[in-house]
Length: 152
Image (cartoon, rainbow, N blue to C red; front, side, top):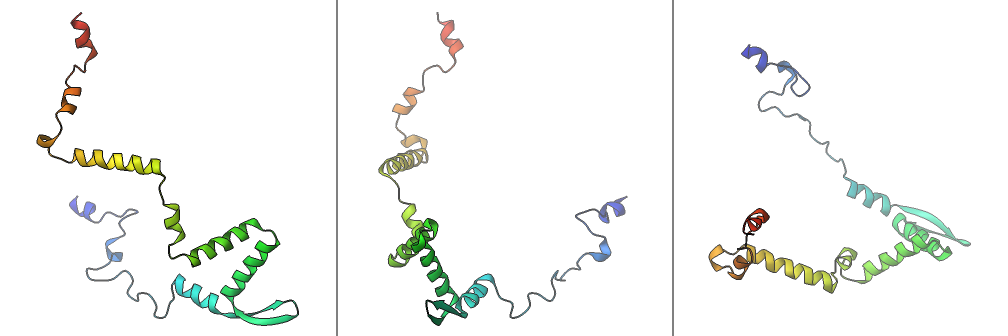
């Protein structure tokens, strides 16, 4: 009976003869040398040079520059999304801060809420002996309404 449980085959346990042996890798050849990740592919693709035509002239630029020119041209023609994206790119490139940090700024009300929360959290981490006793007197009343009714 113990043999059947040990060698049981189901969706998670393949037959014993097909399981990895101790010290054997599941991917013995590993990642092929020279295979590129997404970032490298993007850099290579966007740095390739193409020929674009502006009016009567044609010139060679890299794909990234052509993409920015295309977005700017769409924005100028009235595409609001393209114009907003180009302007956000300009803002990101002109400021030292990333655009994500600008959206993370808190309003004064949010700052007050956060400050209050941090104060209460630091109070709750203090040992009970150093706590203010005024909070204990607030909760010292009876909490069971049935006990209050018994007094009447």
